[in-house]
Amino acid sequence: MKKHSLIILAAVAITAAACTSVMPRGNWSKAPYKALCKLMNECKAEAEAAGHNVNYAVFDYDNTTVMQDVELAAMSWQLENLRVRFTPDAVWPIFTTHIPDLDSVLVEAGAEGVTARMLLSDIDSDYRALMKAAGASCGNDLSAEQLAALKEMPEYDDFKVKVWALYEGVYHTFDYREGFFTIAALFHGFTYPEVDALVKEGVAAQVAKKCIKDVIWESPEMGQAGKVSYVIPDGLALSDEMRNLYKALQQNGIDVYVFSASLEAAVEAMACDPVYLGLDTANVFALRMLRDTSDLVLQEYKPGYVRPYKEGKTKAIMAYVMPKYDGRDPVLIGGDSIGDWWMLTEFPGMRVGLIIDKSQSGPLGELRQQALDAEAGGAPSRYVLQRRGDPKPAFSRN
Image 1 (spheres, rainbow, N blue to C red):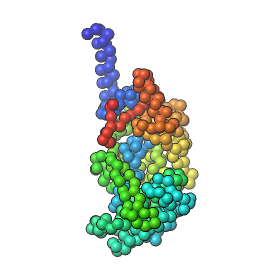
Image 2 (image 1 turned 30 degrees about the horizontal axis):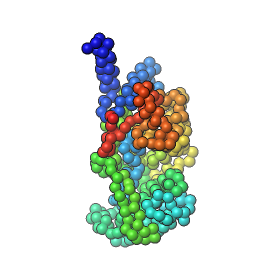
Image 3 (image 1 turned 90 degrees about the vertical axis):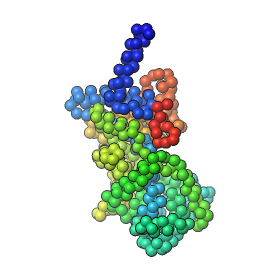
Image 4 (image 1 turned 180 degrees about the vertical axis):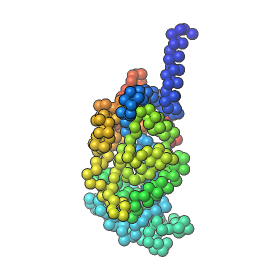
């Protein structure tokens, strides 16, 4: 073997060893792994020189930090187990408060010509029938035996599918801001500590499935909306790669923050649990709701709080984190969807933009293509692409 070939091989081996000492390779794709290790080595030196951490990273949570959506994973588990505290008389008040028009035909609501009023009429009727059959005032009071009996009733499937259809239909017809309140309605009557415990239970059940797959929820042909069906993701996972990344960043001079458009209590229930990531609640920013004097979750956003949704993520980072670092931009930003595009493009000081590959199109697809082009040409890139394997939830080196 020629001398220069030996030198090259030795250099590659040294680089690989240096990376491995920072963070295990696992199933990281080559480009993001190399970029992340380089970033951590740089930031560790900067922290040592300054005597404290001067850099920070920002991550989206759903489908970036974790695979699947923690809020929706908890929601599907909650609906399957009827873990709700509202009474039948509360259905209309809590679900209609933020819907702009009950009679608009909803987009992507699981059936043609369906309105929010039609879905809510069925949801109300179903829930009354279920609670009457069980002799209960709300779903949260059901025993395991009562729940098993209710699952044999057609109203059970009709209820859970049509609540999901209401969320999706309102979200796609109006905006996520309106659709989100369907999720918030499911926590009616719960205090924040109770939401934390409820979501932890749902998350544990979803993670235990060990795989993310699509399942079909289908209602019977009944009620005003008739048959409604929806394909929903089932399961939830935190990959070893992301768990190790969070740990390695914090060990190498980079503080870690989460900015999410999910309910903050739901994100905190998983992200701040030592079983998963163990973040401090002060490092999690998501949709923050008002609480009453009894600590009950209210269906109103906290006034004056910058909501980290789409362009709001950039504004929230600038308002709540940048001042802690003398106005410095985040050095690393991770995201997966169009809702992350603003924060991935609006910080000139960002050194690495980590995109979780979902074959995105549109503006985020353009960043994805930049990463692909750089990989193909062997050039360094501001954006790197982490591929996901099949079956989910594995990352892929390819």
